[in-house]
Length: 338
Image (cartoon, rainbow, N blue to C red; front, side, top):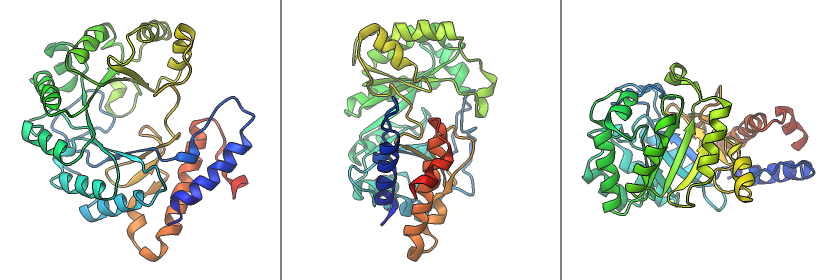
């Protein structure tokens, strides 16, 4: 397979070309993490849903066979193999979820799952995730009370179910990440959510700063002043209790450095296009979940085995071009790497 081999050589030359710039890139290890939106089906109706999820599965979703081929292609990458995050929608809406997990683990791919807090997330289902070798799960918590959380999730009882799922994950020793939306709607409640995340034993608290896509266009982003105050508070929290990370907030790195003198750190920089690949429910691949358009189609990779290597090389070339745009370099830079 030429996919990751070609990518590593290409981006190594990119790194050499940009060595004099203050920014540091990690394209030579991409993809470090692959987010596969296995379905957009979900029984919740979250007000800020990027995927604009609906109750039923889309008829153009990748089939089981196509999904297995995608996993096989990902496993052809050089070491370290990418960490696969199965997201949605709600992954539990796919009847073949555990077959996909089993295949991913067979191919040596580390796996995490991001389920929705619905009746499908039973104690038995979580125990099966643990037994199947899933390394962690993530749950969304956008309020410290049922009233606040359920208002955003659109279904009464979601808060109580989220807490129950989190506690069962702890009981079966399945590491937990709590995802929280940062918007005007949630800002004043963040200290309460943090306290609850700690009580639930979360290993990581990931704050997702609002990106106005999907249904999220109806919500309001916080002001620059509020953002600065929030990040100053976050930087002062005890380290690793839980670990605090941010998404769509690379400037958190500056605040951490100014307050503590620490440089870098997990989630401190821009990850989109920097070791990240997103595959949609229909197989559209892009360097970020919020990218404006797809740069490749995973479904096309399995049409003819004889041309698979060439197709994957094309996927990565276009993914790299999209990634360059996200970090401020023109897509034409790929032409100098040919």
